[in-house]
Amino acid sequence: MIPADDRPYRNLQKHLNRQPIGFPPSRTGADIRLLKHIFSPDEARLAACLSHIPETLDIIYSREIDFLCSCCGCCCSMLSLQKELPLPLDFWDANFQAVLDTETCVGCGTCVKKCPTNAMTLKTVDEKRSKAVINRHRCIGCGHCVTSCPVNAVTLMPRKHQVQPPKNRDELNTILLKEKQHMLAPVKVIGKLAKGIAVTRDLRLLQNSE
Ligand code: SF4
Ligand code: SF4
Image 1 (tube, rainbow, N blue to C red):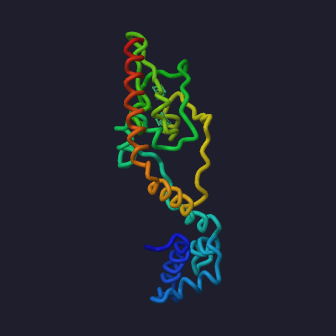
Image 2 (tube, rainbow, N blue to C red; image 1 turned 135 degrees about the vertical axis):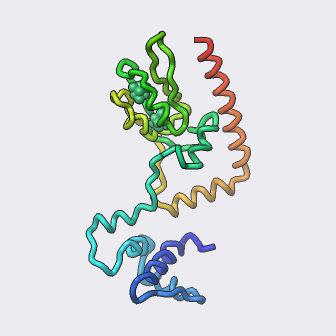
Image 3 (cartoon, rainbow, N blue to C red; image 1 turned 90 degrees about the horizontal axis):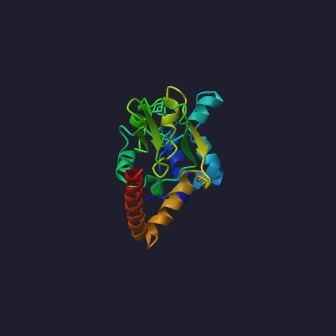
């Protein structure tokens, strides 16, 4: 396994090796030592985005993005799993949540189909009308309902509790590793699931009594 400190340098070595002159890996680790001598970790990350061809800043910058999550629940196994969880938000960090303008909502149901976590449902108002309802415990703030609503009845609002995302992939990996190594990690997951089942049951009782 590559040590986390070496990762930007290994990526740079692979990148240089794909260039016309090449920079093959060395069995003794001299390639990484040499790159460490020349580049700081940030410089190594940046250098791995450059090539031998003159390019615009836009093109170079676009390579910095590993992936862009669009929260499309149709194909993502992570999101499919969230649909089955009682309280998906306990397993995600979300800084935004969807807020509905009930006066504007015409009950077309588009948001219900688009929502990747089943946070949106339709509630019958009378014989002819329905309105969307948002379960804030399930909303991960992806914004699909906002962009798909034909009458702009949904907006995204910041949540009270804001989470600072990791600065980069290395910081994210360090956080994940710490959480995995924590002795109480499985207990925490079971606790979250139990809480989710209890809250879902209470919400159902509340909805049935309305
Ligand atoms: S922002 Fe909208 S589509 Fe996304 S999870 Fe929340 S309610 Fe569902
Ligand atoms: S898409 Fe908009 S109008 Fe249609 S049910 Fe959802 S919030 Fe209401």
